[in-house]
Image (cartoon, helix red, strand yellow):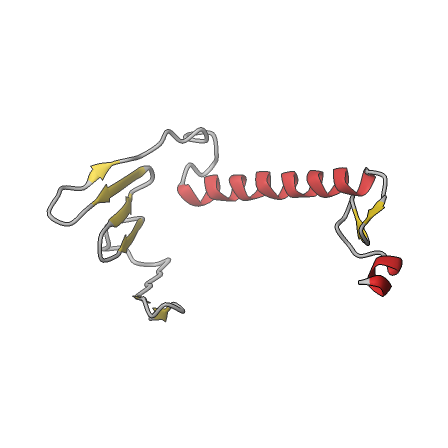
Length: 118
């Protein structure tokens, strides 16, 4: 059970050995909406009194990983994001450092002079 700062309560169940379950499933239900992730690619959205609507998006990595499952594809996406973060950090580090109003324009840190003055 998880409770957010606003008081919302969530129940989270994870299993890597559940053989008689429906497969990969994730569901988030609030007072006004429900999101349901089922299987490998289907994402549905629903509002009270209405049916679930398929809002799935194409998966650019479908059948490009071994094994071909959501966990492998998610790992590839995580690695892509990590590489982009590292590239952005390298770009920031290679920019010339200049100080405006006590802050370094390249890395947003305070300079010694800026820290002393404000």
